[in-house]
Image (tube, rainbow, N blue to C red; front, side):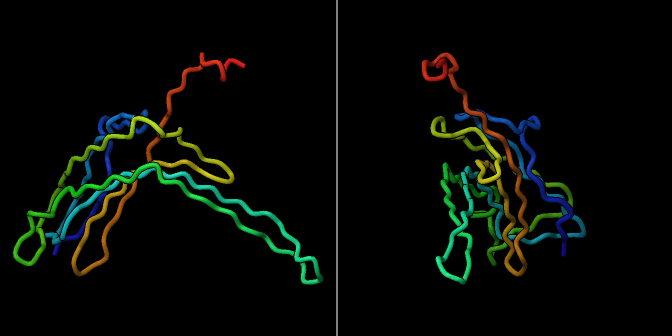
Length: 164
């Protein structure tokens, strides 16, 4: 029975900064050792999410004291999914077999051309974009890997609202 030695996402030309509408391409790389490796499928997804969270102190108005009230919200800009390997290629028992060595599975996603804000990390929130790959196995825990990338939205600094 083979084992997974390495599992990673590699962006084409080591690029990790994109603009809305760009094509995010690369490959999912599996390095296997020790014989045959059985799996059901390899799937990948690309996601863009904004999250915010903060707390505000509140008083109960009596001797019991105070507490912190939590506020949070999340907006999903997109969620795109693909099966890289598997689906229709499964054998009799629904499993695929990969030999030891290095295996590469290319992927490509198109970012939405509008409505994507620039990546951001702050004290109370974030705007993040990432790609996550998963090897689904029948009789074991799934292997997962994730890689973040940056989106920069283009703006026209000559617009009147920016010139004020």
